[in-house]
Image 1 (spheres, rainbow, N blue to C red):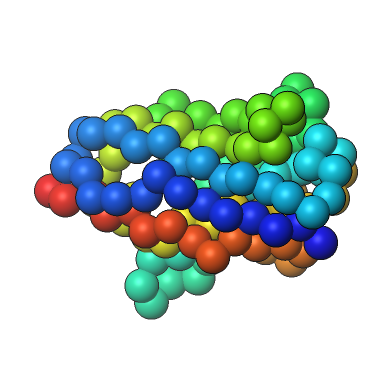
Image 2 (tube, rainbow, N blue to C red; image 1 turned 120 degrees about the vertical axis):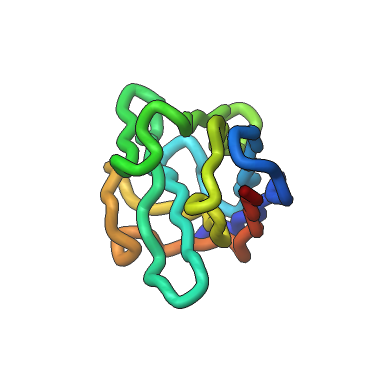
Amino acid sequence: QVQLVESGGGLVQAGGSLRLSCAASGRTFSRFAMAWFRQAPGKEREFVAGINWSSSYTNYADSVKGRFTISRDNAKNTVYLQMNSLKPEDTAVYYCAAGGAIVVARTTAYDSWGQGTQVTVSS
């Protein structure tokens, strides 16, 4: 498994931006897909965005397309989530996840998870 530590969450007004980071250690970072999920109170954890090992493929939930951008820096063992035009409905705990070779929008495809970082968007 790989150890993941998220950072960058916080409180922001609607329309604002945040950049989340996820630092990885313990396994060859550049060999596996990475993803961001989120979980709001009382709701199931949902897929937000994913990126393959080479950054040649990305996938986004419909709710964040055009507003969020996932990227990775394999030299720094870090994956990012740039979040723009934030809405109150984006409020959730955001989790970084590491998985296999391809991006899959299911929690069961990922075997390593971070502790989560809170994102709160005020109206």
